[in-house]
Amino acid sequence: MIKMMEVNGFRATVDYDPDIEMFRGEFVGLNGGADFYSDSVKGLKREAERSLKEFIAVCKERGLSVKKDYSGRFNVRVDPQLHEEAVQVARAAGISLNKLVEMALEHELKDSA
Image 1 (cartoon, helix red, strand yellow):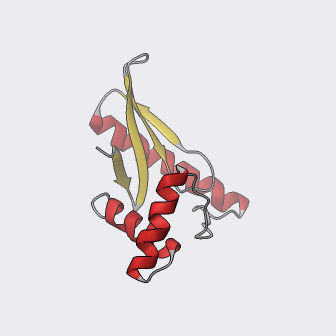
Image 2 (tube, helix red, strand yellow):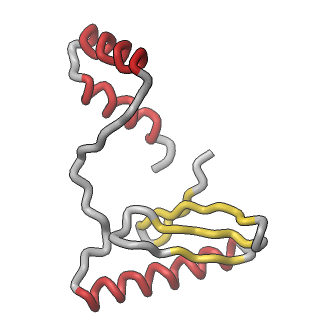
């Protein structure tokens, strides 16, 4: 189960912290950190909107981009046998290893959007 919520087009992960008996949310994909807390789902949404609004205001004030920039490149470490099998499957399908990984990611992420 992916524990995410969307607020004004931005995604945040959400967890429950039993030590403080509150929900904690943290926006992802921002050019910095923005988190929020509440003891209820309704309050969490309200606090998320406040946190995001403040983060955007600070970014504008400082002339910074709100969203983090992604290059489209990242390194992945996997078991060597899995690496070998992935290369074989990609070659058999006539595609690159990068394309195979991209397709696998798209498949796994399609329901989280």
